[in-house]
Length: 439
Image 1 (cartoon, rainbow, N blue to C red):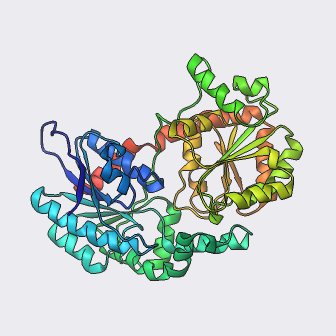
Image 2 (cartoon, helix red, strand yellow):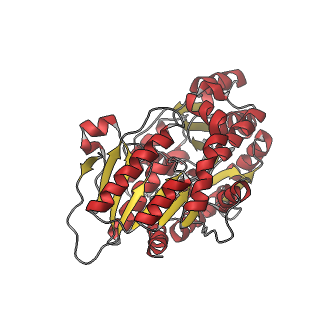
Image 3 (tube, rainbow, N blue to C red):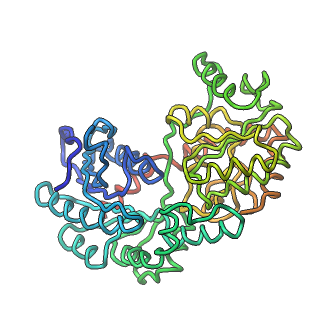
């Protein structure tokens, strides 16, 4: 039996579409998937839909449901799962299916939304849901085989050893086995929704979709209220900026005032400290960046097994005084750091989509990222810069060009924010998904 974290609020009148959304992550599990599911469900509820989230049980949240952020019209249910790398997707999938069918008997579900690959269903399980409930919409956040290939690529470019992280090792060893559940999603869903053209191509090349396969790309949006540009005319906002900039490096007066003309630029990189995020490539680029920008400082924000490795690498390169690694930050502080940075750098070796560049652009901060996978679908030369994946010389060149041109960075900041507002919001995501459910 599922644990109901809190009850849905009263219906606001009229018939509501009841959407059951199955996701392996949901707050307080804040990850890429957890964040998108949280914001998407909230946007759907604001449209008047009723949303039930079925997610993995969290021990702390079971004891203290207040840890789960409340949203009007969104109900959260937690189910059992085996705490075994990769195998949890099957365990969670079985318990989630049982709870979904029980929910449907008591409170009929109109549409089922599955978030792959963190849930593994067989063809029979997909068929059961379609027979007993109906429409199954599956979001494709990326593939296990793609994750595995990212690790292989990381090894090629001298990033961290996979065996240091049990979850990464499990993906490397078992991705081929769990790929069959992704194939089941491709063949068993009413519609699949890849989060990028790159992800769509990935699934098409690996899983031989049927001729009548329905797949429509919808890139995830970001929270444009949390991630917003710096307002230097607001006293409180300016004080927050000065405090953030004072934490890192030795900012000059121009940096503290928010001027792009600063001689002490702040670079920001965000992501899990894992090999396929490309942080060692970024560190290899830093000596060349420092040579042209003596006052530059890099902040890396993320948790993971590579922290000691990265700090040791920085020391060996003689750049330790220009590097700070933050294991984690409150969301409000991270959002401020996005606003206060002069440039975001995202050297990832594999992504299904990659939200960090969008969060930077929404914050009025240009981004330099890899010319590979889904990243060029969001970042181009009108809003940022692209460098060759795994190439520190290419990375340094593009970063130095941007740092040398404050006028261009200011123009990119404005253009990037406009792009996110027009193309990458959760309201737009919700409208698209509501259309899928109705079909």
